[in-house]
Amino acid sequence: MRILLVEDELKVARFIRQGLEAEGYEVDVAADGQSGEQKATGEQFDLLILDVLLPKKNGFDILHSLRHDGIKVPVLMLTARSATEDIVKGLDTGADDYLTKPFAFDELLARVRSLLRRGSDAKRVLKVADLELDTLSRRATRKGRRIDLTTREYTLLEFLLRKLGRLVTRDQLAKEVWGLDFDPGTNIVDVYINHLRKKIDQGSETKLIHTERGKGYFISDKNSPATRR
Ligand code: CA
Image (cartoon, rainbow, N blue to C red; front, side, top):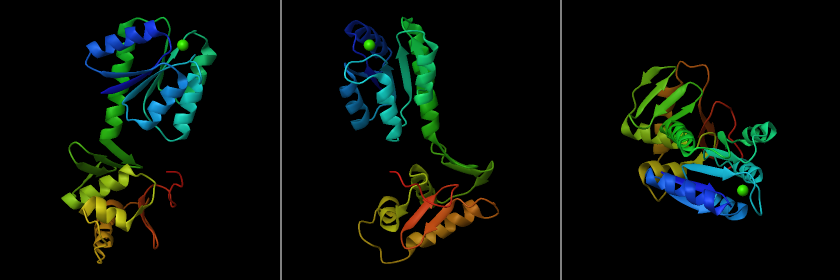
């Protein structure tokens, strides 16, 4: 588990880092807002611990940019004051939890564990509307009803769900699901989409697998693909 800590007070940063490392987490530290945001955007972390008062760019502004860019990493804010307005602002901006300084390390650790647990559950089970795909047990259900999938159908569904709402092209699917780097010249993708659609959408009022004619497919509870990312 990788954690990014954005904190300019060296003593506090060292204290948090040592404690988390002793618990087996990998910790990266950024000492100002700008480098913190760069790291958070350019690398993969499981959790961000974000101080509010930082040189160059404050914690709220960083959080705001990250959420605006669609980066969903769980964020724990560290607020220096117990000012309720700070807390409210943080949560409104998209923080998942906050902690007021000074705090006991055990309390920080409890929050960290809880956020990481939430994060990994969210990644493990992919959802759209009443469709759920558990990527660990590889079980798909719709409205709690089990759907049997072949290995290929499963891979196809997982790929679509990981791109939730976004349009994926036939070529992309041929490459990601079938490992084909060339246009297979057949309608294999369409055939499988149809199999999958029968299993997923048949008998349900809300259709989830959509076709954009001449472009590709997307999975969503809306009728048009998301435009961002
Ligand atoms: Ca600070």
